[in-house]
Length: 257
Length: 218
Image (cartoon, rainbow over all chains, first blue to last red; front, side, top):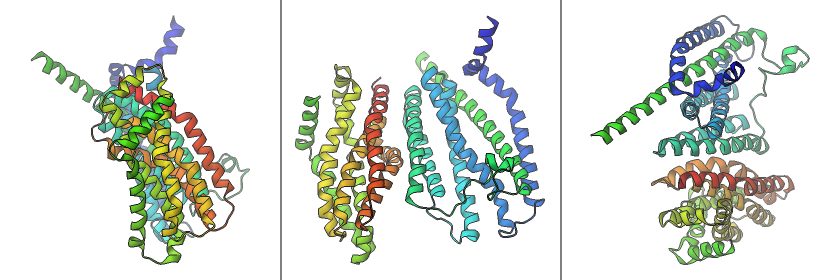
């Protein structure tokens, strides 16, 4: 009995009431932690790291660019996961969490694209280049747009959740396909992955890698962005749940009167 | 299945001129291109493969909202859903009918429009082959988009927004094959990738389309 109740414990949060009660308790913690991590990471990154010997102070935009790009992709992965949970287990909280994450992910994509453009202007001499990484991010942004538009367009919440979930699954496959198709289409200017590489961290990989001076504040910023994302998604999911309750109450009132 | 296919083909041919519209759109887009970029023949022949692919893709896209909407409005889609035929087969047939009425004419018209855009002689075979391989994927992906938006009153614009990102890989490999063909290069790699995408779409997407359609018919 106790084992089964422990195994089921994660799914208890699929109960909207339980979810709201829990998130209300943990949300302040996430807000404060993310603010603290971001403040420390950004101040450390902007004021207490040396300028790069080639890129000057423009290198510091990395503290916004890389974490935003990281979250742009991970937000979609989270939507994929919650969509699957919705399709398999029919928990409304899961579908609403996917809905809540989409605008956050879209904003993260914009931040990554805009900071990249601001950095690219002095470094590459152009605001925009049809580089595979840039292009695939733009396509990812289009996927976010379509996903959000579909949510908005459908009145029945269950139908909307089903359709957007399937779109998310199919879209993931095509987004991944596009990611590698654009590689084939154009060789890019963007550097390869240079922050998180298994070999680079253990020291066995000696190719170009972000120096530790920049890496540690960047890591703090990344943690801050992850916490910020979690806080925003929990907050927005709570809002969605309440909005649905309001709608249910209004519908009941209309029937009653 | 064959009866359904014949019915869809007949409807497309006889009702409302939907059959020729995609083709006419393709023609107009191609004619508009020299007006917008100038009549220089070298420039036109450089961009011809890409423009023809994009035109074919847009012509495909435009005809999508009629793909399921008519059957949805008159209720025959409900009948098809309760018929012994699985819904997966229904959407496959719908996609096939769409391809025969829209994709195939586009493939056949593309070389003629290629002349207008001064496509280099070596490019025709590559253009037709890549379109022939790629347009079925466009129809199947489009059927998925049409199934997603079938219940909506103003689904047309949303349909484009949903479907266009899904068209990206097909467009990349298709126009790359056509471009390489026009330059006289080896086209086997993009063609194989294109064929792979088409095969995967034809094999897998009908299940997604049918699932989505079931939700919409609920």
